[in-house]
Amino acid sequence: DTAVSQTPKYLVTQMGNDKSIKCEQNLGHDTMYWYKQDSKKFLKIMFSYNNKELIINETVPNRFSPKSPDKAHLNLHINSLELGDSAVYFCASGDRGFGTQYFGPGTRLLVL
Amino acid sequence: AQTVTQSQPEMSVQEAETVTLSCTYDTSESNYYLFWYKQPPSRQMILVIRQEAYKQQNATENRFSVNFQKAAKSFSLKISDSQLGDTAMYFCAFTRVASGGGADGLTFGKGTHLIIQP
Figure 1 (cartoon, rainbow over the protein chains, first blue to last red):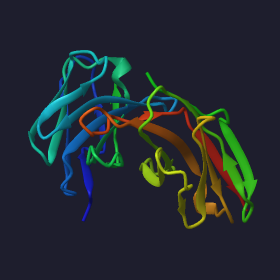
Figure 2: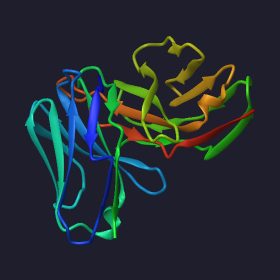
Figure 3: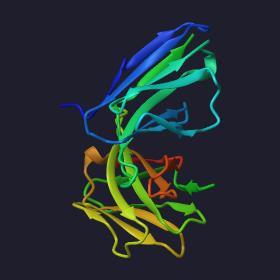
């Protein structure tokens, strides 16, 4: 069974469109995260949700909105996509008291 | 704010050799975790090893071990008997233990591309 899954794995879209990336974890963790990996492979935290409550919200354009319907799911919705949004987006989960985070396979987003 | 620095953008060694990847970090926190993650060409982020700051003993996982020097804020990864499958990007990461006991998001270094030559 996949521990942290993301859909889709690849997403190609036009500028100005709205898209969503879904994430699910079956590890029973209480916290989920979204990270962005840019073209130079640099990884940066975007959001963190703990028990459906937003904990971390780094300096991210408000076109990005995380949505957590329950502890096992954290979706990322992006409005009005821009060329600079092209990146790999990783979902991760972990128990906040333990520190370790487990990552999904990533979603490669290409905005044309 | 925390920073993590990996000063070796790329390293190349022969199969079966031992290699050490460097990582330094800067923080004013006293309670935190440090990690090494591996990212092979498949893109998957794989946890290699974890170290708790309050533990003096260096963590080990099979062929992987760390040299954790808290005073120097250094956290290097040693890979023994390197294998072709170790070829990957390696990221050093830091997370502090927030007030209330929970850990924050990870702060990553820029990564070291390790190439194992046959």
